[in-house]
Image 1 (cartoon, rainbow, N blue to C red):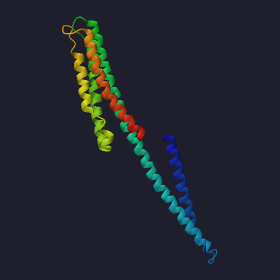
Image 2: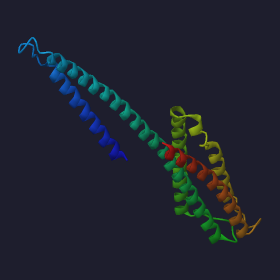
Image 3: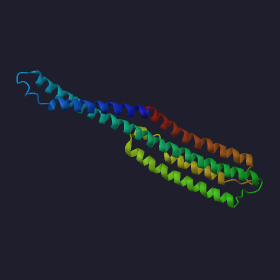
Image 4: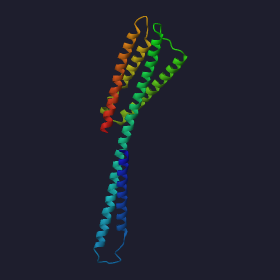
Length: 213
């Protein structure tokens, strides 16, 4: 698609330059010295002016076409960046969940315990989660400035952040003295379903925007 647009732009520009050059050439030729009685000289000059004007018009149309093409490309890039950040944010929740569920199962029936390597991984996950969250806030602000409410209303960071925290709190709440490991897994699964639903709704919204662009 991108190569096709570039090819079309190149053809239009070459045609515009050819018409302008040909028009200027014809219009600048002084053939009055050859014959004062030849009326077709005036006709050629008029044709040259018309061709030059047509070339200039094509140049303007080409500029408009290029502008619209770049606008569409930038729009796609803006929404795709947000989409990719959603995937990365979702990935950190999977990593967090895997770490806690794995360690809870290994520690059962005792309280969950994390060793030094686990804490190192956990800090890295939390760091990335905050980074992606901050980037999502920035990208969403950019989208709201550049595009219509209808295009952006489907992207809700408040609900997303709320479910990420709820999912994390559920993972941190493991207590074998209050409920079984199976009950803990069931709670986490419910939180996962809710979180993924919100993420997927936003991803589907972006897919629709991309299809219409």
